[in-house]
Length: 77
Image 1 (cartoon, rainbow, N blue to C red):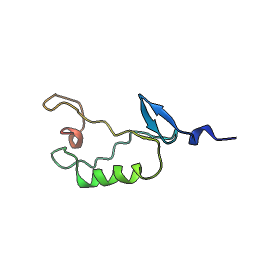
Image 2: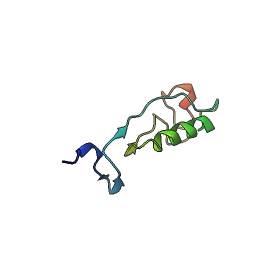
Image 3: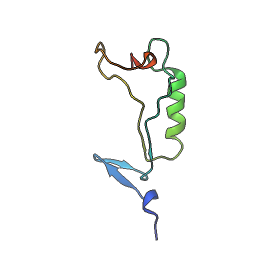
Image 4: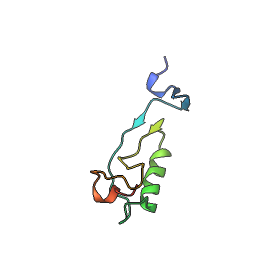
């Protein structure tokens, strides 16, 4: 019998190699301006190569100039 957790699936039409989801975790790795840093890129690169089927990012602001309640190291993401 195949373990369903390790079987492939899809999400919104995107194929996933398994059903393991890495949850959003706040890292505080943005730079002083709140932008993506090399450290943050490396953090997500390592997790993406670790075998999860879906990797979700931490909270971020997708629209520039919008007032948010995000903490200082996330404000510019």
